[in-house]
Image (cartoon, rainbow, N blue to C red; front, side, top):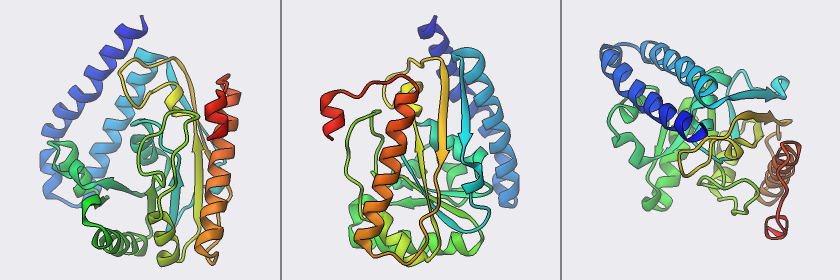
Length: 247
């Protein structure tokens, strides 16, 4: 049944994206709020399908730490789930995405209309400068900049280094950084299409105030996210292997 439900959800997820994306095309010609309203409706339908077809819900903890104004949000990244869910959880996020995604039909059109931040990873130092410039602009609009500091989706419990771009943003923006832990990969894996029923936990942690050195910031950020994410995995019954624990 999980395979059937997961297959139906994949059809629902991408079929709905294509249909609603085309129906809402006129919204791309208007103000950003029009596209945002269409995208919010899409998300409501997507997560309803996730509950009905796959038995997956999500719970947000630490809501008192959710920023209402400009902030840097640094999140664990385990699946496609969080790239969508932050648009429902945060007031007005701007997510840092791979440049390639903006060229995707439908998804890319709306990602750019919603003024997310596309990064060309092959551009080296220029990519970092462009990301910093765009992030400061979005923060100046009162928005929350969302970055996945490990730079890629990571399997639950697996190790992956934290990339220096997040420290550059933290120093340049001069706003609090809110770490986010989660366990989404247990239910919506980063690869494959079979989803597992259960409740995804998303936990906002106390903000790291601006002013720390790069080394202090990176150590604090990684320790908070990894410790809290491992705790969420353990709460869900996931046992770390010896290799995962060592990582």
